[in-house]
Image 1 (cartoon, helix red, strand yellow):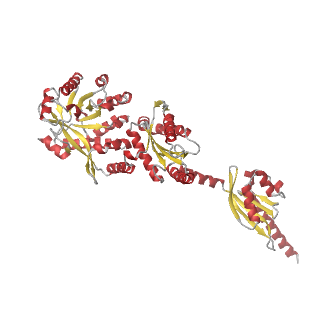
Image 2 (tube, rainbow, N blue to C red; image 1 turned 90 degrees about the vertical axis):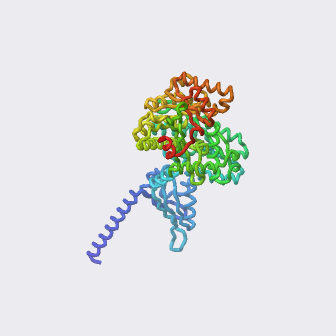
Image 3 (cartoon, rainbow, N blue to C red; image 1 turned 180 degrees about the horizontal axis):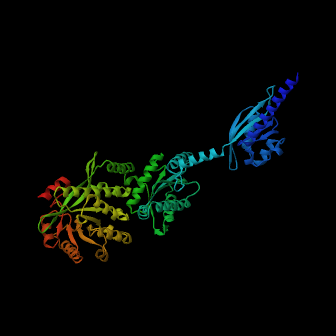
Length: 564
């Protein structure tokens, strides 16, 4: 071999050395661990930047038995994978070392004879990718605001709980928790304050739960509590859980410097008594929630199929929501006459539901469900806007309408109610005094610190205020005098026995005298006979409405009576 051959060989050797150094540098910088051991488990290779996360000195471990190291550290999971590889099986796994996660394979190496000579492993640091996956999973199964599990996780755990219950014979309960006063915080202080309140509520509720239970945010101001491992038919244990939840929410919350009392209503369903499948338990807990609200809120109710079908109630709620979306509601108008001259002076707007399945549905069949489900807010807004739209149409047609609109008690909790009324009047270009807002006596007397300023704000707009169903609540004369009510509507129950009954006529005369002393005009509802009309007119009642004078009719028909 000549000098040229020696030179070429040296070039090849240098190139191989350079390549080995570059490969070694890449291995030492890459976020991985290269490992090799012989058939006895003696470490022959240990390199890679991933070793930094393990805080090990590779130089001191070469020649050490890997199984002894793993036994000392308690990593029997890694020992199992390595033992299987030394038996000829390629193994793959994910390994955690503190906060660091590695993923890779142990591959058996064979001698020329075919015997296992050792194992080579390459493990990559996948910590960032693993954290991303965990974050995605957490987002899929947790509420971003409160950090609680969401409905998807609840349904998953509910299915798992039912499977455990079938194996163990233990019962479980599902509590549907609905906050009673949350909308007030949202409307008066804004959504940021509402979010803060929800987080505080979540913390209080979470503090009442056991480690084996699951508290989830169902959506909005609704929470679900899944309670497992209960004695079958132990209703007292379930009631104790519900009572603890209500007690946890009893102390006032302080949000944005303001103090709020936020209670809850709770509906409870129990497996297996109230359903065998998750969907049944969810439906029956929802139905029980309606039953709790029907009792006055701030209470819990265990599902009772005798009080109504959950499926039917849920269906009605869904159908009402659809009715709002598809414009199935309409207003009928009942005339209000002057009893002395017999002229039509105003009319009351009354909502009806044109149900494609049932035809015309009266409010008594759906208002209660609308109030219980919260749909009354949207329905009340629609009624106000539709009445004002119709007034505008009548005015453009040369008529002079005055319309009264009923307001649900829940609407009086809306701190922005007066502004909504003002915006609606401006939108349709209406004089405020053409509109009367009717508030039931019980709603007007409820929570004076909240309703009094709101009613005064409405009165300052120039909108007239009236007390509806007077005589059915418990009025304070001082408050009646202080609030800007212009009209008092006597409940129809006062007209029963008039004019024949002496006590009835005396009572009615006393109410008329009270209204006169307060400077309020009086509208008598439910006039059905000429004798009633004559007595009322003679006793000084200015206005009346009822089937004798005119039934509620669509807008087109009431317009004809206005023209006459």
